[in-house]
Image 1 (tube, rainbow, N blue to C red):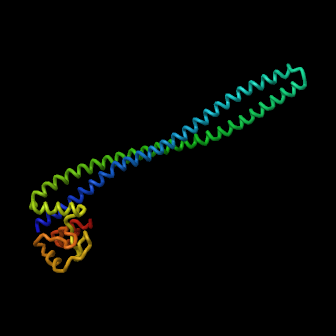
Image 2 (cartoon, rainbow, N blue to C red; image 1 turned 180 degrees about the horizontal axis):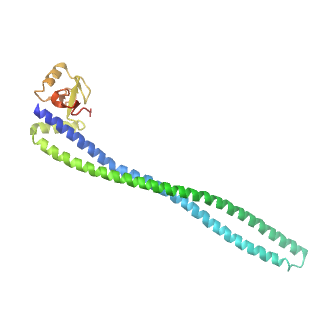
Length: 249
């Protein structure tokens, strides 16, 4: 019975070691997810900023064009005093009217651009604040993940020491048998039987085998999955009402 109890403890340790290994494997992915989500936000912010810069540049160019056209209109109006024929006068007036029409169109375009810039400026303001908040949250999450990783490493080191110490008290042949089964049964070599049902493969244990199992005087295996089994309701395998390894793995 004592060797079986040690095997159950060994199985519990190995389950936790495997859980830690899986959690550690997920950590780089979680860090990558944080990085990608923040990168996406930054790219989106850069696009909005680029649009705003493009509109500002376009606005400046139009304003330069307007200044140039204003000078041209002034010059054209001053030249009206110099024309000598009605034909030249009408042609000059038509030219001035066309430039004034283009000026009006350009001014409308500037107003439209200003409206767009105002919208983008508001969007930039909101996105900047949102991004700063998200950066802080991501930094907090990153710190949390790093702390968790340190905790897992510390726990793993402690479990490894416990495991090494525990194995020294188990028959080497039994340890070899345990490791052999564990490698071929998805990490689970020892499992409880409750109500005559193996908690790993969920198959019924024959009555005679179940009766022998309840005596707990020998190492037995499940006839179906070949895992080492024990009676889960035995007082030696219950702590504060909980079976040592109640989970089906």
